[in-house]
Picture 1: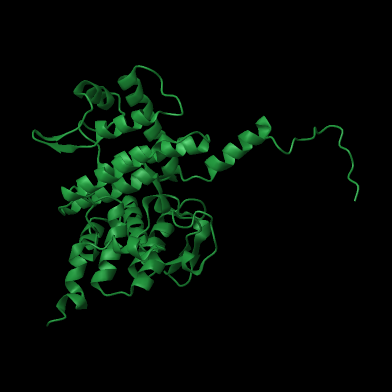
Picture 2 (picture 1 turned 30 degrees about the vertical axis):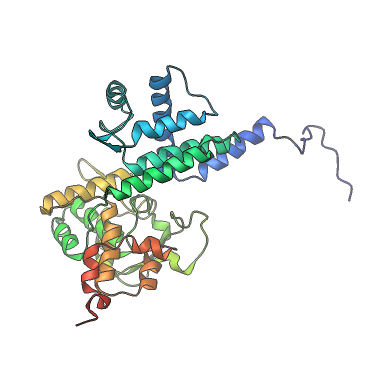
Length: 353
């Protein structure tokens, strides 16, 4: 087949990318990335730039040298000495980083934060196809030994408390029949009862994916999630919102008269329905309702997810059913959400009896 020669469209070189194509590639990569991930990458790179500038008196440039990465680790990781736990970041630099908004508080980073900062720097080198200092054996060994040192000290990551059924009922009781109360009740029920949805999934929930299967029962199709970022059509994408949860969602949709777009939205003065909630707003709602209920503990939006899994463990729900609701693909990952109190009802814990 002989193809026509196009006069107005220049032929491309198969071994090179044009500037337009390169920009298109970058746009697709950016659009396909999670917004939360992008935000965390930007924050990490801002911190690297600020730390490097203060530590070396120059702008950071890639590739970064291996000694620089080793310095970053010892600056931010605590180690045991005769004087107690210390790190090498000068107090003056630490204070400037906090005052500039690059750090949340003075002192050494949490171990998870340190690992994330290194991972982001590694990703930046990978994308630019540069020699990666984070893959240097010295860096890998130091990170490995640091992780073990933290574990030996019992410095484990602090998890948010789980919102199991009882505390969930307490915060639901704070939701009155006002517009805001109906929204918050529907949101809390939706997030918990549909399998412990992440705050981004709650904020991104849209009417087009909601199907009514009874007078007040629904199936929500979770077309995109952290564990299904390619949008693969799977049976477990359908998340039931039934019973009291379905009724709360039905009441919210009735009173808000939302028929398209985002399900959960801001409520403006005068009872006007505004734009969709942000993931941060979902967290704020959970924390505010916990405070109103007077329940003690460190709760956040993720407490709904851990609470669902913990409650499922308490009630001896088969692990496969729990994972089908949460969307986890790894048994070890979902087991990590089980809080210690869920083991109290385990039959294995009472074999002697």
